[in-house]
Length: 422
Image 1 (tube, rainbow, N blue to C red):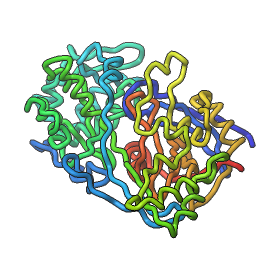
Image 2: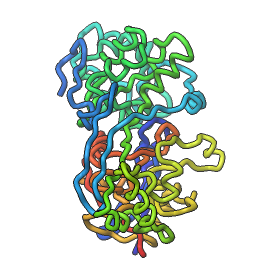
Image 3: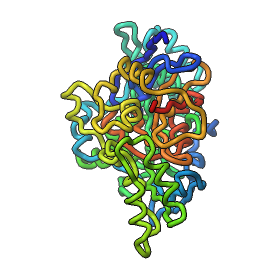
């Protein structure tokens, strides 16, 4: 099979580093490298579609859910949020809190016209078009934007211009916006007891992209924090990532069947004796999924990557994660797009649903066929995923539709599945 690697590198260290790769008609063509209608000017933005799973409660007891029954048995699960450790955030602190919009391969006249077309209030447009804010270098026009301008920007205008800014990796916070996994920004930040001015600013500057409500004005918000400690807490609040905690329900009648499902694909693993012994214990009717997954997954699930991995020249991304699912000793080379592509073609084959534990699901763009994310199938509609190369992205379990919603911020997706060859 002829292999043609297609890659777009978005070289920034934001939270959602999107993946680009391409597929041939019957198989994988190449794995790309990691990168990542609102009412006019509302006083507070309401976010009814912000949460991929509206049953999740940020505070109080989690809501229990149940998967469909299948060869995996039945899975009981609830959702929690993982917060990035302060130590990781301190490694990537910002040197400046100045907000700048970058327009590469664009002239000053073109940017001026684009801002004029936003139909802003006259005083806001005059302020934004002040030439003292503008600079031009290396075929890129840059506009310095004060916090006051960001607060006054109408929501439709923000949505439009941030979509334009997201086309360039120079605008890392528009390319990789922070997703609000709550009914409102205020609820999202409630637990941290920030100053009202900061919470209000986030409320005013959130906007809609796809089915998510997102936030891009991180630097301006950090300028409102009163100390380094508060800035770290604010970044931790933004870093929260949803993950599923799942347990398989046990009974003596189904233990043989589910042992076959969970033990498949792992050459030396026999889950049946373990599950049989657990099922015999009075009162034990469920077991955490993590005990049934390969050792490579058990080591990293619910954790964040060590930033020191960069000293070895690599950081794990989604492809490294999904392709190493059954590897007792993870292959570092799978963080390289070309080698990951070759490894997939040599060791995997295309399959159709129903999927098995460990199948690799590639999310591909409907229009172009480019694949920019992969994850490993677990059971029902639950997958094992790492949503980007950034150390701020942990390894988690999520619903397939949750992952799709995140990547639909940029693309409309379809799924192509690969299974490890025997």
